Length: 147
Image 1 (cartoon, rainbow, N blue to C red):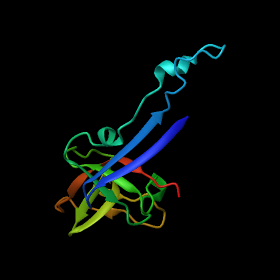
Image 2: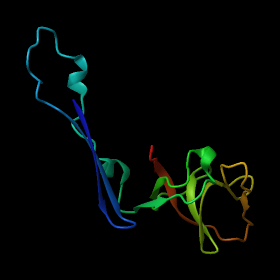
Image 3: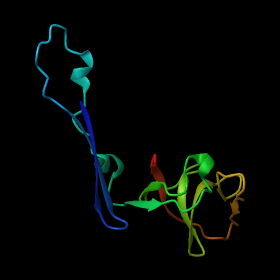
């Protein structure tokens, strides 16, 4: 028997998310005339999503507010796990601020600096060599709702 529990704890920006997968141990160790499953030795007792997603305290959660990255797998309403301590590299999906407005885009550093959307209807944001680019963090995980 597999029981799935989801628990949300926390405030607006600091969201602690735990997902516990608990395998019912009632029948473990009993002999039913067959042999035990080889997979039984490798069954994980629980997975702490908070520990998996939060590599350090500089990790934040944000919610995507449009479909500008839909072809990159990020839809409106998806929960984004953002690492603000990680240095953004060419090709990373980042949270960037331009003139006080936040964008979720793919960072292009060469041949020219751009923030690339992953939606055919959106245009890239071209950045001049003098224009400051403030990267808030790198998106490390996407949490999707299936309903």
